[in-house]
Length: 298
Image (cartoon, rainbow, N blue to C red; front, side, top):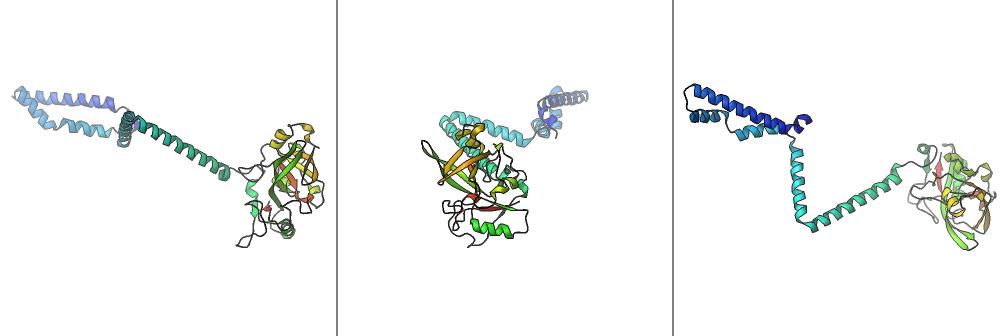
């Protein structure tokens, strides 16, 4: 049955009723022409036609969509029930609102964590390198994503042959010394090839390059767009500014674009620090006994 017939069922019912009336009148006229009285002729015509209500119902069903009509009747019944019970109606609306809000929040979380791609040049080509097994992780850990020590990463990178290159990253909170005290910032430890392998270009200044591959490199940092705006005033002269933490003075050499938040969906960083600047125990991430890094391949 077409939707056109469904929406025209009222007019079709009127037309069918007129057709029935015309048929009855024709039968009555024929019966009277045979010599019957008007009452007998009408009775015979109605008996021949049968139950008019059933005939009309059968025709109506041909022009209807039962599931839509049933849904409409249920909705009307539900509306009457809700109008008669204001308290129940309020509780039902509140439950629906909470349910819809919770489902929306869950979807947004899944969308952020699982559905969106990372803000890098070729996210589909990235692979995480991990050690599997019950004894794969050892020492201390700075986050749930980390499972490699810095010396182990360097050995792995030197011996790998299946990838273009490996890079490592890890997270650690840092206390930046300011004139009015210290302020916590989200630190992101990265190897010198981190930004180049991800295809991230600087918004201001420069990012780490080949000069940050070997230990003992210049103490320099790259700040995120958010940190640059929030703590450094979004000024161009922020490039070259000094930041002090880990008992070391670092020079800001660049700012990452606003679209780049790191490699943890749902989190962001403030200050990216090259792993090459730390040789001693100042940092928990780069210590020999701490599995504070994640290795990724490009």
